[in-house]
Image (tube, rainbow, N blue to C red):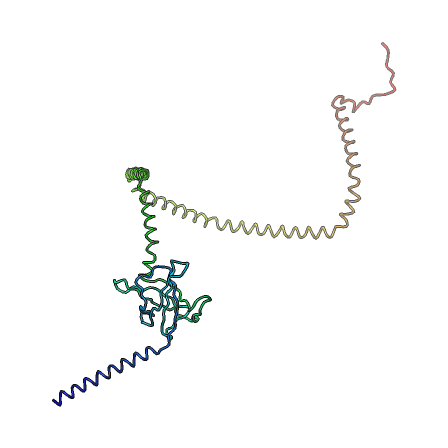
Length: 308
């Protein structure tokens, strides 16, 4: 009997301690300060409920306190959340809907970006600071599903156009042309088989030609070097001659000026006398051809002719 009494007292004491600890923990949790934020979703928020949990990187930090449709914008839903003040919410924090299991129940999941970010401030016209929405995971897939379906529908339309009767005829013609080309290539199979051998022979001839060219270049290299040496020597001689001519011109500049002024002035008279002398000489030669004896016998101007 005494043993049962001791066991009962021990169990009762343990239950009292457990209840006290639970109450103490609940009191401490409820006494922690909280902060409210607003989230604006531009999509359906089915599965999200009032009082639903709010997670930060998978850790529960608060609850959903309000869900309203924004007046004048039927596609926007305002969701207010209340989280512990110690939750690191800043300008790098984003919110998304996270679906749990296959039941379709959605919760708000907060994600932070690394680095130094500024604390969130309440924008003008808003009641609480606003957390930006960024879909991720299944939520991003579901949000993009309508757009994906539209693209698939457009792709199917293009595919149906592709397999139309006209395109089928074009494809058939293309396949026929490909078959014709294949047949032609097959008939030239022997030529293609000999192509590597012909290429090798051509390459060998090119190598031989290059070798001969290299040998010829080695033979004429000394002659080219000698020619270049002669050209260099000629250039040096021309330079020396030009330099001497410049020196002579500078030295005899005065004499050349006198010659050009005095001597060249008598050149026209000299040319005129030479032309006169040349004409007289031509007349004398013509007279000698016609009457050579006139050189020996000079006719007398005072002779008197006899009458018959």
